[in-house]
Image 1 (cartoon, helix red, strand yellow):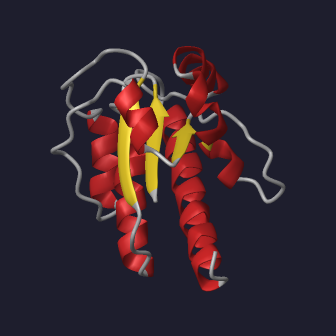
Image 2: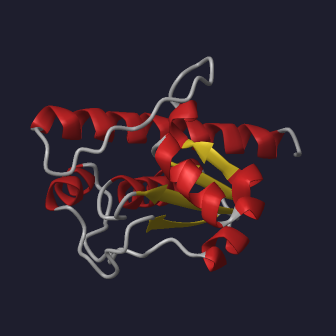
Length: 157
């Protein structure tokens, strides 16, 4: 399975989700899932947001070596599941690559028990509160996603 996380610039939210997913998958023994991330805005090769990199480092997750990537059709073909941070990201992908629409979901749907899908706030350039909120949302969503994938594997799906 191939999972692609998408946000605006691929320097904060989708980057963090990618790194957290790899970490959580390794911790839980989930294998056979490849993960990448991209942004809908062209910020190619930009370094990660230092505040998000600091958060990951404090959580024991390596990731300062990241360079942002721009979303492209090749990624939509590669991905089995495209997890976006905001509905606007889904709209962007679906407009440019309509064939990928069935693969697109909001990452926020993995936060709530009832699978209601909220946007994950963009903290870039905002207050510490916004960073804590986004970090909490992403961390919880990724943990729940990995848990669901493990459950599906256990059930033989």
